Length: 362
Image 1 (cartoon, rainbow, N blue to C red):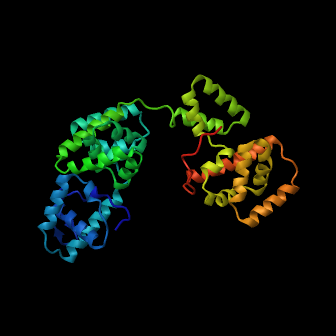
Image 2 (image 1 turned 90 degrees about the vertical axis):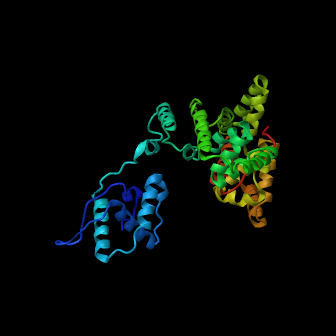
Image 3 (image 1 turned 45 degrees about the horizontal axis):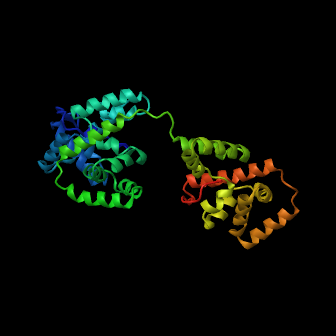
């Protein structure tokens, strides 16, 4: 049997006339019975077939065909298998079949407006399962639905999503809202399938109607990322100006900034050895050597790092610091930024978890 398998290859809708199993004998079987034989053979070999992706009427016909068959002789089995394999080997290129599959294949390749128009047409014609696409959206796109829509709509959406996605979304909601949504799910047992589909289509149209975003992140995150990579003097000058013109925005930006001085409030003590293992020791020494002169926050961060490694390592670093030449402010700041970059990289990879309720940077 071929390694890849498409259930559409077993569609019983096509009635083929004959199977040749020898030069002298022909076996006549309808297409649905041939499909039933292949399915029975593969299931007997322990192969999991994605039959649920077939249209429902095809699934029903296939089930009826399997239910109506009893025994098949070896010659017929071999002939059916040979024809099935020959047809698969003759396929040079396969298309997704239908507009929903085409849209999935071309996702990101055609314009968002064209894709949205085609999805609306599909929704009207009944050829689209809206929940399949809703399940692929980012949590940040789905969260406003749970926050702003009625409890009944939110309960239906949670019921249609994967359990892990639903749990992730509930975790991001205030406790009272999450509890009310969970309770509302108890009232979804009698919701008709057509109603669930209409709710999905309405949510999809609502989300598609939102204008496409030019930037993947919000302004707070973008400004914070820029200031993270800026010299301290530039960072403080920009923050001071923002504080004068838009205090609320400035406060949000301060919270988004993560500098060397923020390390004690953002990094778990158990993760300090992992962080320092990812940084060249010469860089660590420059950062620790320059920290006391950079400010109280930087000095406290240096002591935090030294206090949370092994005693032997801390003593070795202190001994090397005592003998090391002075570090320029520029080199020290570059070294501290490199340590922060390693922390961010480890956090993005999921190797460490940053504390999220730390005080804003000053």
